[in-house]
Structures are given as structure tokens and as C-alpha cells.
Length: 219
Length: 284
Image (tube, rainbow over all chains, first blue to last red; front, side):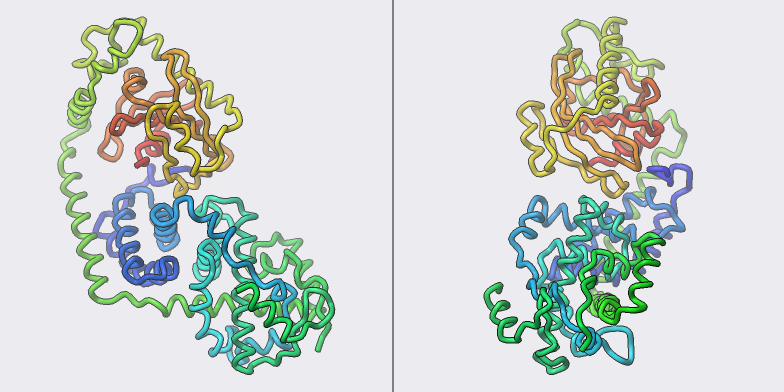
């Protein structure tokens, strides 16, 4: 494996590079918006990323995944600019998942949350996702976006976030657990699933009242 | 209602849904899923969540026309800057050295020599920067060679770092005498391991040593006061990304250095010297 594979290759011309990079504008902006939760900052982050990428275009190995490469620059820029030193704190102080959500719910309830027509969630839950994602602690949100939206491997995410793979897995697990908990709660509110389906972290069923009481305390 | 399976919290289920399990474990999970509705639904829900996240996030932010135009303008401006720069040194490699000499001179090479114990001047193997080396003596070159040797030896020994937390690294600053920050090298797949302060006996100085690992290789980045470490005098100058980089090799290791605003950065690696030069040139 070469650190700078491009050394033995002719880099793409600036014009070619520009054309290809701009095609990823939408994908970059989508991720940047989820990271910054702010439209203006997201646009600045994307522009900064593309200009940096253009300067460093010799390092891009043509024929490989440019979107992944751009996302890596975007994520690094985001971490360096906005969150230097602050990330760990967010995780330690961020809200933890409801332990009940870890016990999770019955197979029939999980099935009811999915759209029978597609393999995604029910549309009414999907509409709630963005808000749920925005409320996640930063490190969880970043891990979830990179893994689930950008479909990066644990290894790639670990490199980008500068942490061990185990940490990536734990952030993903905790982030997804919170998301599922929020969506489950929404499903309850919308009457998609029935409350008695809740199963505690032990084997004994837990009442909805206890679930909600617990939820209120952790908020 | 099916009774919950005791494996529904298995640490294998999520990596399975993410396609991160090795084959044997994948088979193990698949076998279990065949007979367990609870875990099967759990995996299905994970996949549904993934798909819905993709749809929600991707449909979320359509770039506005204004923004697309702003980015295009920024990129065009950057392209023109680069093309302008590329046009200049195209008349052949020797011209590039003209760039180095004024830079080296402006950085105050004479000041550097003043900091040495011995009153001598360095020399360059091929004498290309001879303007600054008018009164060189072999003694100083030998001691500078030993300094490079010392850095390489330290790289080889690689003792445990004193500071592991990147945010704590500025604590090294008082000992080293220049700002010490962790440069972002993750984009090359380099993983941060830690930092320490090392003595450089040849110069009676200290440098910060930042350690990274890369695909089983070790990369050490030294940060030092460039006025006290005349590394460039023993290394060969090159132009990488329009800036002077000083490159050399010792005992199969390559070492490459740049200087920015009085701070020197040098990497020692077992990669080839072009890669070391690229790497150190990318620090900003």
C-alpha cells in the first residue's frame, strides 16, 4: 500500500477535477447539514472542503471513490474547525439511551415499525428521523451518518474520527439505540404499535407507565 | 407475541447488518436468524433504519442555485491560482532552485549557524545552495549528520509516548519552545499514537516527537525550533507543492523536513523519500 499512490500517476487537470467534484455537491451538503445542523455553516463547510480538495487533488487517486475522499476531507475539516477537543465531552455528557430501549421490543412491534411496501421504516417514522438525528450527541450523529448514510466501513470511520474501531462500534450502537428508542416512542404516539409490546431489559414485561416515567427522568 | 431472544443484544447483530463480520461469524448469525424471529426482526429494523436515514438525509439539503454558483466561482478562482502557479516553473527543474535560495536566505541561514557551538558553516552535498555555505567546515557537517542520526535512532527506538491525548499536546510547548499542535494527517490513513519531548544531544536542544502509525509502519514527526535545528544543511532540498522540502535518508529510513514561520517539522519513516517529502509538505 502506498501512502501517496498519486506520486506515480498523473493528476487530473484542475478543470476535470472541478467538474467531477461539483457533482458531489448535493451529497456533501446533505452530510454537512446533518453535522452542523445549520444551513449557512453547512454551505461554508462544503465550499471549504471543495477548495481544499482542489488544492490537494494530486493526492486523489483517479478511478477511486471521489465522494468518499471528499467526505473524508469534509469530516476532518468539521472536526478540526468546530469540535477540536470538545468531542469526548459531548459523549460523556450527552444523554445516554434509555436502558429499556436496549432490552428493545418484541418482533411484532419491530415488524410494525417497518413499511410493508418497502424495506425502509414506515413513512410516518421516516418523517421523524431528521429531528431524532439532530438531537443525537455529536459523535454519535457523526458515526451514524458516516456508517448508515455514507455506508463507510468501521475502519474508514475510525480513521476519520481518529479513534479505535471499538469506539466506532460503541458510538454507532449507542446512537442507533437512541434513534430506535425515539422512533419507537413516536410509533407509540402515532398508534402504530401498541404499548403492551414493550419488553424490559430482563424478561419481565414493563408497563408503558414505567417506560414513560423512566423516559421523563432521563430527559 | 414471541418471547424475546437472549441473543437480541448480541454484539454480532449490528456488525452483521453492517456487513462487517468475517465469513464464519456471518454464517453463525445467519443460522441463528433462520430460527429466531426476534433477532431477524432486529436486523430488519436496523436495515430499515439505515435505508430511511439515507433517504431522509439525502433528500434533505438540495443545494440552492446561489450556493452552487458560489462554489463554482470559488473553485474557478482556485483553479486560476493553480494554473498561474503551474505556468511559472515549467521551464525546467533547475529554475526551481531559484525559488529555494531566496527562501533559505530569507529564513536566515546565518542566524542558524550562529546558534551552533562551533563557529563554522554547513555545506550541501551538491553545493546548490552554496551562496549560504561560503565558509563551511567539515566539523559542523559531521555534527549535523549526527543530529539526523539521533533523530532516526529515536524514531527506531520509539519509546512510549508521554502524552496520548491530542488536546494535551500543547503542554510540550514550554520544553520545545515553539507551538506544538497535532497536524491532521488522518486523511492519509495515519493514526495518532502519542507524543513526547526528546533531547537532541548534538545541539543541546529539545524537540517534540509525535508518533503515528500507518499500515504497520511507524511515522515520527518532529516539531522543533527551526532556528536551532539546521536540518536543511545536511539534507537535500527539493520543491514539493511549491515549497522547499529537505530530504535525506539514513540506514534505510527517510527523513524530510519543512520550515514554517520559525517552526521546523521533520518526519522520519521507513517509506520512500518521495513519500516522506509529500507527507511533510502536506502539514499546514
